[in-house]
Image (cartoon, rainbow, N blue to C red; front, side, top):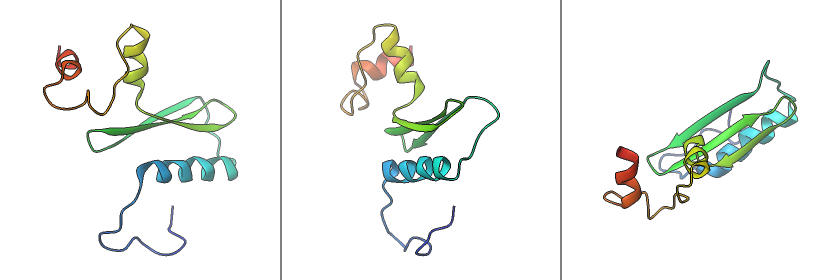
Length: 96
C-alpha cells in the first residue's frame, strides 16, 4: 500500500498496531476476498505480533500470535511482556 502523504520520514516511528488496523480496514473497505479462510501472523521484533484473519466474510485482527492461543488452550498462563523477558519461567518452558 502506498502512503497517502508520502513515504515515512527517516526515523519516523510507525506503530505496529495502527499499521495492522489500517491494513484490515483497507481489506474490508476494498472488499478483498480470499478463496479460503486465511490466518497471517505478523511479527514486529521479538515481543510483538498480530494475527490477521479472513473468515470467509470479513477480515479481522487480534494482538498476539496463534501460539499464545494454543498454549492457553492447554492451561498455560497468558503471556505478558514481563514473561517474555530472557530468563523468565515462561521462556524456559517455551524452550522445552
